[in-house]
Image (cartoon, rainbow, N blue to C red):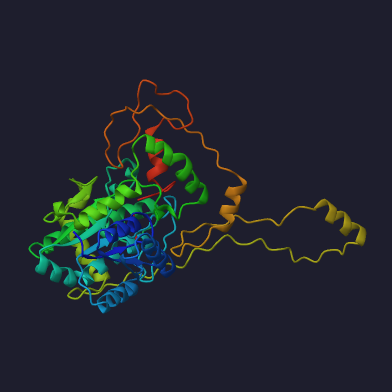
Length: 437
């Protein structure tokens, strides 16, 4: 269907950008909601280069900042347009071994704030627009991009815990990790989808969530180290493509497009979809009591009308970085000219001692200076072994991995253990989705 007004968050790259481009080609009016003005405008220009008549517009939105979410909605309303579809696609995935919490401007844990609470508020502030369109046309939609990693039964989540409403931002000592934060944010998004679907029955607004599969070439892994990004791009991704484990940007973007405009999904609501088909989401996500608790807690944190406002606790003082080495201030005996010349010759070519720093994920995507330099000087050496893949083995989204065969154990250039492959691909060692945000 053409002529729809569609908002896509995180549309400057990855599946969000490709979905925006495809929807513009079909004659829809697409608003690219992006945090970076530079990247957002560049994305619009790329769409216009291929399609000068495309209806593509950039509006600034940082889903990690509730003030920015409210400003975006105000800017959208100033355009005087209807709204047919909202796609909550923006998201981030911190490094799996990250044990230091980071925070949004609203004091939310960064992953939960970006991937869930920001989209939660955005959706509610646009509900009246969607309901109005739904009542007029009988077809308005909300699409939430989530992940199979929301499920505790996913093999990469075996050491993780359920979402704890009493420890929502994982302030309890030892409870935080990049993996746990991502899983929590994505299960929250699926639970929100179920709650919202019930509330929107009979309004003409459908709401669904989707897992695009493991797509290595999105920007979700931007917070990983340069060495891990290198492994993902040049070593792991080709291997998993052969094993039919990964999905492409084209595949993920087509799912967004289909759920947004295809008549097939017009009356479909309250579903979790993988590879274009409805599937069972995790047992945890289907707990209706938890869905209600989560919805009320989220509404309070986002200060929705009709709910008692609740502010997130103030973050603890930032952890100190390793102290720099200080010179000994003890007076030293002045060296004569000959001793100075001799010492200079002995130390010629030596540089200053470099203290090992700490790499933090940065939502502003600052450049990784020292780490990138070191990775260029020392190429990553990886030995991988691969097992034969049964030619007609079925695809099953992110879950399908290399299966053993009669040739198991033969040495090649890639890993024999499907668990090792999975750990490298879906854990923080190398990461890929969001979503978020």
